[in-house]
Image 1 (cartoon, helix red, strand yellow):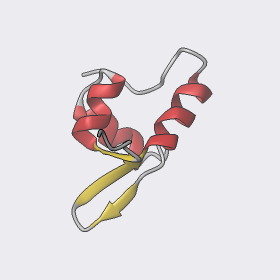
Image 2: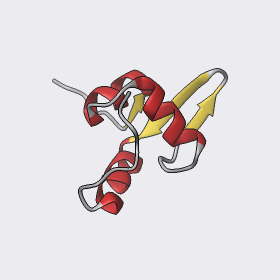
Image 3: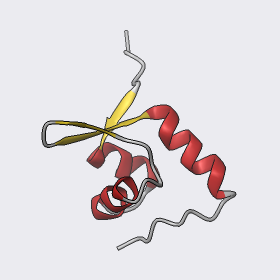
Length: 65
């Protein structure tokens, strides 16, 4: 049985979005992708990634490095 993922790490979000981890961290820092901090770790809810993609209309503003 596979558990449905509700949140991603920066590395996992970067893989889903096919951009660098730096790009995801910067987008979170700028508030472009909603995220939570748990200590030193950044957690990104799945719906935050969906909202980011929907708001971008196919042109994400996260620079790929």
